[in-house]
Image (tube, rainbow, N blue to C red; front, side):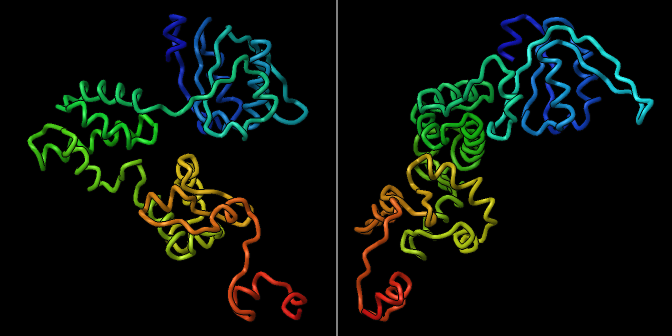
Length: 295
């Protein structure tokens, strides 16, 4: 939308999953006027036939629409007005090489810092008519995971709490009490995030443990743990993904108010830990070969 505003052009918004056939894309492209901006969200999910049709539109501003089937099928060339294509994806690795290489510029959106989120929350509070103090803004911003969407969601929930439990003013104390109700801790971890860390530490001594085992212990699907909880935990340095499994880092132990074990660095690096205890214990049998036990 910023690009369209700067170009003083119209914008057409669609998404990859909505373009199931090449004809769908051809209809959109031929309806564009000169200078229009076409935005395709989740562009990695666009259908393969439509993606191949998009190649010629991006390079030559023309598309070939096939009419009919079998030997009688004919390709009708259609001209496309010059346009600007903007594609967005959260999984750039799923884009094909030819698609990625045809874009003139590839940018990356980073997470927001606390000061930037404070500006977002201040603006949103003005739009929503929320009476909020500077300390309340800072408290919400610090728990928003660097994401404006989460900051706006927390602002609305804190506003609800303030209207019901307080006098409507979102102060530092009110914001903190509201976020406790919604299970958002001081750095933005929610119930699932803390459940993963607590289970990993209390049930498996901090790891390493496999994803499927950890997900079963938490009571979630492996995909949920891997795609919902792990990205933020890894980004915060609370969880390490090693060849032998997931390991809770020193920061995770301390965040939960616990003392990390002495061999934690070896676990994270993937080194074989030193075995202690009597020979014949389950730990010794798991880590020593049969010949070593015989020796």
